Length: 247
Image (cartoon, rainbow, N blue to C red; front, top):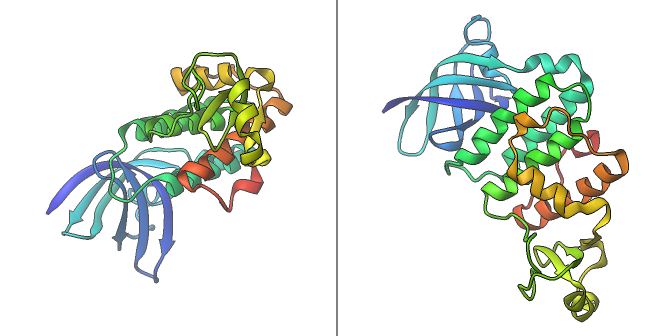
């Protein structure tokens, strides 16, 4: 069966001189692996076969496999490589997205957020890490693993939060923290400095394309980065990313 899809290239791996294996995040089928014999020497194909590209692809779909017959770039963000800091942040987001997505499961919310991320990153002059954190917060939401932020994740009551507990999946009140602190890993308990809860709620509720002027201070960004990475590692097994040390 032949079908046309739109997608974002997450990864490309050469199998031999003629064949490549592409990891595409498609709107229609979610993340898929697809082989192709398309030559990079053809101007029309070349951008569409590289990461940081949003394109249209004609697929030959069998029961278990995909093969790319035609490829055409709609928008290439490869110019991000002109700014190495942008490039590293973009590469980290692609690896993170690849890691957390299940094969063959459409994720319309994540797909839309990834397109918005690249559009916003292309225009942004600084604070790239803040945009990454906002994107990751949205991914947690769309994949159904968003932290509890409006009530205590343990007792369910709307009390003033005392801590953020990775193991409990969100904020916890002082009473519950006092009861469980000896049974929780301290490395997975975070103080609520600089109002983490408001920042996470803002990231979750607002479009990435509307965050051009939002940038966390360095200390706040590092703390929230640590929290989100620990949370994603715990609930989505998004750990040991090769690009993590670059951002």
